[in-house]
Length: 121
Image (cartoon, rainbow, N blue to C red):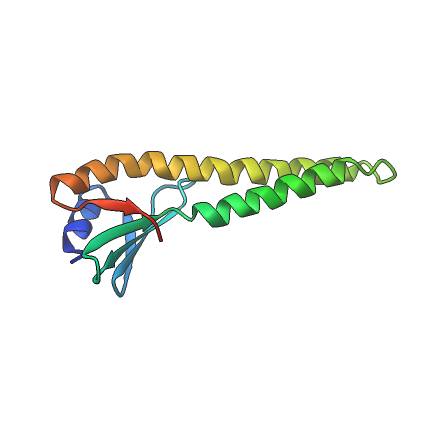
């Protein structure tokens, strides 16, 4: 059932790995990883951009970075650590947005061949 999806991905030169009834895509350098699964019970295609994992890690990085900033007795390097954690949190959020933007183009191409993707895991 994933043959149509593989044809579209080959046409767009997107690297992917097939594992059972799912495809694991790497969209671009900073685009993140996307998983497309075929659900046999519902005869539907689901895709996930790891939003929950990346959002949770961004939340943790934000909390830790602000916690590090409010410790005045620490040395100056704590500001650099807080900046690094803040940058990692912003990069994770950027990955989520970029993956969804890149999936918009792929979803329209999938619709042309009769594959309708639903967001989910």
